[in-house]
Image 1 (cartoon, helix red, strand yellow):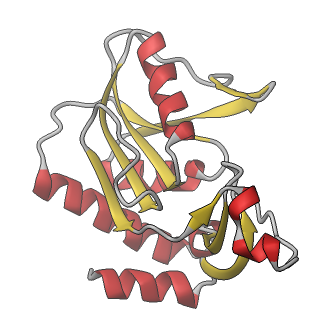
Image 2 (cartoon, one colour):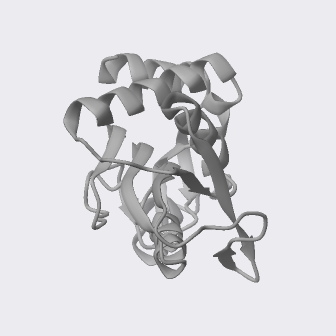
Length: 190
């Protein structure tokens, strides 16, 4: 798949939005990826995750892995589809008291996981997921993300793959030109 085809799927499904948005990171932007809109179409979600896995396999040998882990909520469907493409199990971390924790699953020491997420801006949720894996005595094999809003600035200590690497304009709220023009913002969620 070409980047143009991927952007077309994102736009056609309403996953790529324009307006005034407050991101989970607290930053403001004029573009927003609501990957839930593309992920609501299982065949398209599968196609995108298959492509992500294909690109990873072409670019690197990540070695043995025992499963895929993703942060809830946005990453769950991506994690599931990546695990399907890799023919392995998938688990997820979920929020409890504002932090990601393992509530439903157990990570065993020595296991290796691929971390999968829908969108990263600063990479906080991915890093929290990495920390969960490492704190359990397990290892991270790679990080896969559909959309890297940081244009590669979010760095992890593991091979990282994304279908789209973009850098939409973002501003701290006090420097946001749309706030200065008194345009109301939307917090669309993650």
